[in-house]
Length: 364
Ligand SMILES: Cc1c2[nH]c(c1CCC(=O)O)Cc1[nH]c(c(CCC(=O)O)c1C)Cc1[nH]c(c(CCC(=O)O)c1C)Cc1[nH]c(c(C)c1CCC(=O)O)C2
Image (cartoon, rainbow, N blue to C red; front, side):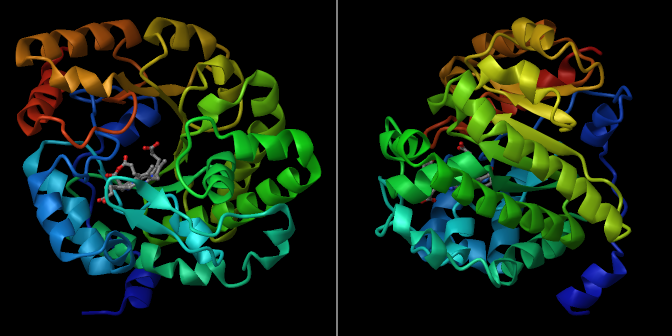
């Protein structure tokens, strides 16, 4: 078999058979509504839990063949319309030299959080090279998918990464990171700028490696208000979209559609619609009709979402009803179905199938 570098260079990928999502993004009508699930390769899958008994979380991320295998688990089980590469948003802080551990029951922990004086110590040089394993996993997975469905690459957004780096893990308030915004705004912008530069090159590298759609997760957007989001998030998100487009073009690569999922930032949808992202992810707290109204300034924009992940706890008939009601509210045009946040570890595996089937049975 050819080396990964040769495979990337040849870009000789299998022909895509299921292009529902890409069709929607091009403004065309697919035969069925497309659906995928955030965290679809996660702990709710018994086969993923078996995998995790044998392998450390970041070992899976760093080993292209393991990451590829995990990425394919939900695709084998369900009729999903996309795969998303198995990785984590926190591989960027790791590549910048910060230690990140995945603690059972706790989630990610960064034992030495970033201090205001610590910004110059972040190892920006060579960061993309240290993330090359993600590109290799993408290239391998693109081949192993055999064109069955398109493959998402992703990154955390600058503000969300800044939050984890300063808090040292998850937080209920993000008050340490927000303190920076108010007390150290110059250094905050310096850090956000640095992260933005890395994220741009990281996403371009994923595109070069074969990712067909790129999603930016701003999972901590909900901790900011409109003013803070305008100052500390939107300009960076805009630059990411613009620069990824330009850098791909410089490399003679086709444009790759991008999704922005700013969780809990329904307050800024009007602003988000003007950043150049083809798709906006809608979280489960936002009303679908209000989301459509908020983005009406951009006629081409596609919305993605937003079933409450807890709806998967409902009995199958009720789940089907929730799904149908949601689709009716969004409308079938310019729409990709997903949950309104990642699937929970105790979600019912059979209900995932009920959800996927309900979407595909919906008349369009
Ligand atoms: C905030 C965030 C993180 N990681 C991610 C986000 C953004 C999405 C979101 O808001 O949920 C993104 C992510 N993390 C993971 C993926 C894989 C692809 C997928 O299937 O969607 C993706 C896209 C694997 C994962 N990332 C993690 C797991 C479970 C950990 C384990 O196996 O021990 C998986 C499968 C761990 C993780 N990683 C992170 C947290 C907070 C946690 C612990 C809590 C949780 O599990 O929900 C950081």
